[in-house]
Image (cartoon, rainbow, N blue to C red):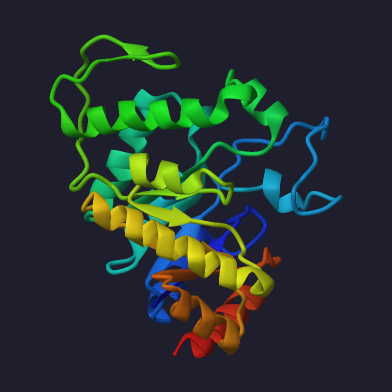
Length: 277
């Protein structure tokens, strides 16, 4: 099982380049960044994590800009989004951003995606909250065409464009990791993804999680489709890590806290690196 890091990279925390170097130097295999373009001040949509939304949600760097910079100072680690809210981007421009980061990193980029939870945030981008999943899948279809065809065109319900030229192409078609934990998420992983990236599996739910991974592997084998499982926000406890591995998890991402400055973040990274050895 591989070990990586995921974080809300903020303007008040550790600098992006310092974080990238630190993650690679400590032997982790990947660094994933979250995404929110903004947070509406209305706060009508309830945050799934509790009553008070942490300020890190509206202080995050653009993950594609930050990962492009981090790519220049790292050589080995995978760089990814955990997760990109792709309905809040135009698929033509997002496809170019993804391809650009992939080429700048030498083919190390992975695109974690999800439709999001904040209805007002979606609405500000013109996305339809009631059709968020269908829109996400269609945007993925359109982006794959842009990455793989010289003159792609797409005509769908949410995305529509005549033949275009769009370069650079990625060095490889970036692996797409589908976020979510609902009853139909495995269908989306198999139809549109290369992996599953569920969020913070509680220790009490590991047995059921293991059964879902087994179902995913069985269904993927029937269509000869390799898939991976990455856990976002893994519990930093030896017993939990053993349980993830036993359940068939390929990679865990430890979630770094949003400390002020670099010192506390580096100390936390040191502790997590020791746990991962």
